Image (cartoon, rainbow, N blue to C red; front, top):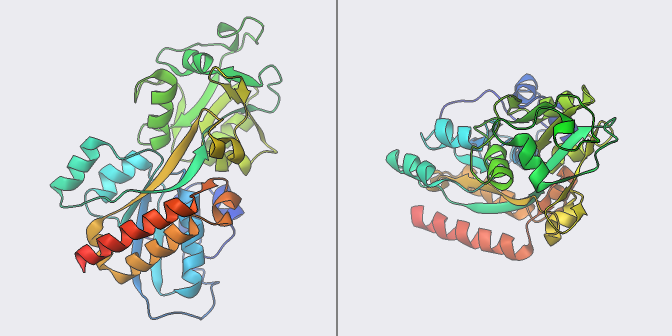
Length: 323
């Protein structure tokens, strides 16, 4: 595995979410505030993939390193697809986070390089559409209205969607095409993965979307719920109506399935990476922690105890296969 420079230091969740992607982790690299206690465990764990899953992986890495400070963990928010294509499937990362299931063509790409991805569902998300706090004309959008806005060659002004809305052009921010959030959103809203207008600011840095929405009364964007939860005082979430009335994005509504844009989150370790003890131990910790309040504190729905046990059994079985 190549050496990464974006090592995870022991800083707070708020600092990680407030930072702009991996650059913040890189800037803080080498700051050892974890103390001198350490186990005999050492080596590298390299994580790429989803910017939505990124805060979970960072938080778990931070906690894991408190007991295993000689394990060098890097977390890089490349986007789900970008992580699979450029890092994980070529064999350059141990784990890829994903905000949608791996695609068949990605499995094929991995197979060409002798990489076997293992799927673990680790949390739930309420994908959130947000607007500027001054956008007092909109509190709820139907899925059809989202389609009107975000489809290729979509609506140009707010009034194109509803006559009573301002005759002002949209300023749109969203996920880059390498993102699992982009794939999930386009399939749900426009009926086809990748069907998305191209005149918007595309980024893998979700905090850039927050900044864009905050900076314009007529802006709109979408991202994982954790980034909204961390910035409720700066932007406004829009309720979504998929035919059963307007429902707000929340952990409770995502968990009970009433929020229409609820979705699962995943990690994909490479099976051969399980030959390395530090990867085994980190994954055990990750899957156990995914069932705890740490996940809800970050802004996602923890996995159930049943899901955790299923994940741990699957992990143990695959460790035995490579041992």
